[in-house]
Length: 184
Image (tube, rainbow, N blue to C red; front, side):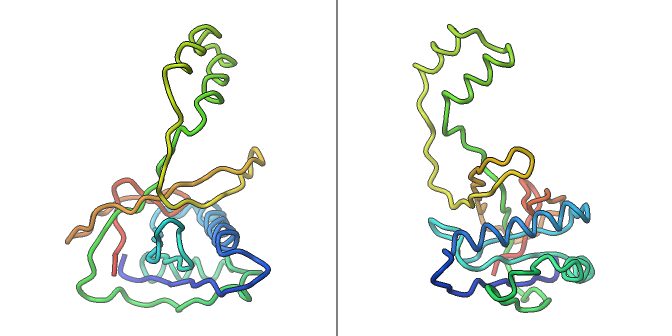
């Protein structure tokens, strides 16, 4: 993780920042899947309640070059600008950026459990009365599932800052529970 690319969304009245970031992130996800890349991570340096308009892609110089050659931003170049591949500044800190899966619809989960035969209808109703939906205040992207066609919220958590990097693998979203990315 010695290099990065900043991709900044440009303001456009006809498309929301959230829609553009979700589209950009989906394109990155598809590129990472097609290349089987486990050595590229992401962060959202301007995150707050929303991910913000800056996607930072982290990796080795060679991995980022290969990603850029894939043309993963084709069709979006009018809506964003990139910094090119830059070295990570000296003195950067490190943090994990990972996905948090929230069980925000207990009724749906229990219906699925009944369909799969894991619970009876009575057990599901009992458990449903005992739980409430979880609310999450993390930034998220609304992503469309390519397999099922439904939209889902991909909640993103930026971990605590650390002084030293932790090596590891990143998933096809560029996220990891253990591996860190530079934070500056």
